[in-house]
Amino acid sequence: MRNSSVHLIVGENRKLFAHDVLKTLYSPIKAFEEIVKKPDIKGSLLILVLILVLTTGSQYASASKIFDEEPMTNRDEWTELTAWTAQWASNGEETRRDTDSVVGNYSIASSVTNNTCIWMNLTDMGSFNCSQNAGYERLSFWIKWKSQNSISVHPNATLRLFSANGDDYFKLNFGSKLSNSSDEWSPVKVDTGPESEIREGWEHVGSPNWENVTGVEFALIWSVPVNLTMKIDDLYFSKFVPLTKDFFAGWSSSLTASALSFFISWGLYGAILLLVIKMFGEKVDSWKPLFLVVGYLFSVRIVHLLITVALIPTLPETRLEDLTQTWYLTLPYQAIVYFGLVTDVWMAALSSIATRFLYTLTWRKAIGISVLASLINFILGPLIAI
Image (cartoon, rainbow, N blue to C red; front, side, top):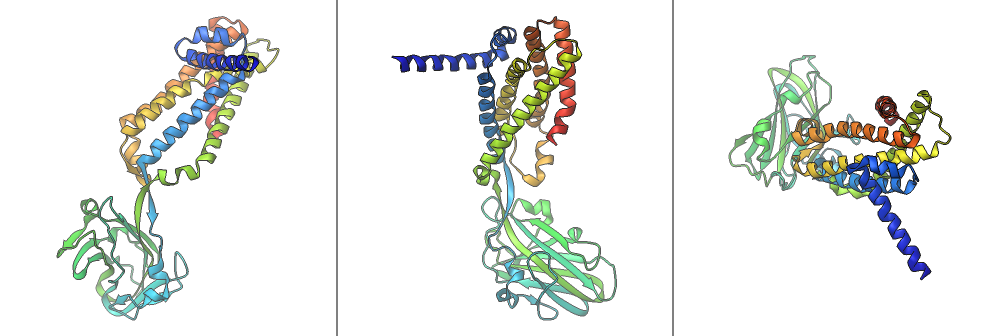
């Protein structure tokens, strides 16, 4: 009977704390009238738990919409391994490994003498599916050109992706992605697949197939004959995968950071509010009741997170590198951001209610204290976060 009574009391207390938290949102005056009589940390901890659950939900929902680049597992092997060196072909000297590299120990290089063009290709690299959303969606590499004639004329640069044989290929002019300076490595990333054709400017020669890319060629062309060396490094295909793939690997650290942020915000706002109350000439016998009551103010964050969780699924899928351009100007994202400001004002309103009943203040004085404390917190909060 005693154990049953204890469980019953604990269950009732949990319902009471949950009711107090909920009541701060729909009936804050009555809620804080009761809370200040016997403030308890359990209500604030319940708010923390709900915030952590909803934060995890919003982060996972965001991660499912954001895609990041994932290089092929054997990245850089085409320019790094001796076994591949002999597979490269060129119109100049025999292709060779060069210790001038960006990634790993080697790049692949070739040179021409008194020529207007240099090209290198690898035509038997395997079969790669580069169709959109089904396989590899990007080709990345580093390229460098060096002229022994000391000319600074920018070359025309052409990339070819072969499909099955040399007569069928995709062609792209990537000169705009190339450095204007000789002897300087240029990082180049180009999207592949049908949806990238207009965006990148791919041309079709013959009947190439994005589902069967079997080779690659790089060509640099000048208007006058030159002595030239071309080097390629870190050549690889990559896919784009949702951030949910590794979400739970860092979930515990993210949860810890969110909890720490909550306690820092709680302590900061409580300290500022205590300081402002004393500035207004009010006597504070103990800081503990104030800090316990301040924890309940964060119930408004629950509403903000609920709105965030509801709106994130309406945002478009995007690559991590395009997040600013894709998300930040959308109506759902703006609603999430601006409701954060509404939350700050709402929290300030709850603060004035809490301080009025905790210290038996006039509404005018309680509002003045809350406004000043909220302004100081608004200024110092981001600085503390940094």
